[in-house]
Length: 218
Image 1 (cartoon, rainbow, N blue to C red):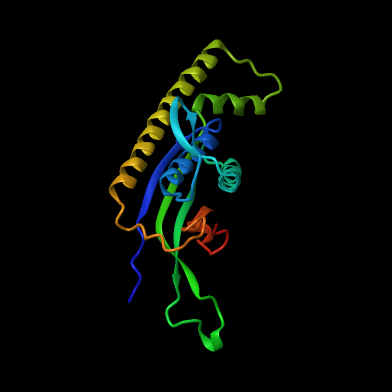
Image 2 (image 1 turned 90 degrees about the vertical axis):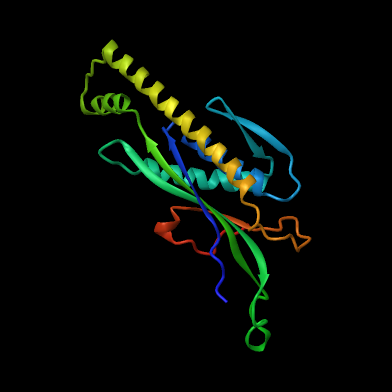
């Protein structure tokens, strides 16, 4: 019998270079807050005037920090004509199941396998305000560059527009997560183990380019 495909939830993330790290970490923590079943000490952070839940767990925090930093490094090295870059970061949750057919030839191999029961895909757009990008480009292309008050006003206006867009996108994404976790519960497997973390997880950057793999499952 073919295994049922796990649900996949797509979240759109829009951010500028100054806020992208906090936004991605905030979204990942929000998902884990509702899908991380070990005993936790909940906390919260402020991101763009929004209060988001976080989990105080050294291993999880380190993993989120490492993956987010790696993605931002890739995004920062990508250039495009419209001063934007795109990337993905995916989060998978697994359950441990006994392999069908036992342990295989002569009892070798693992008795259990990890089967994914839920996936979250963050589609990240990293954008630099047009006016700010223009001034930065001009500064690099000339030895003496005169920046007028009009240029400064344009930068301030553009930053305000970008911040507003980031706030709206983040709020919409957080509400979407809450709606999904409260609505979709039937696919969550029963906890059948006494292990501290009953559902292993992994975070992968740009999975459709590099393949999901089976590395880094926690």
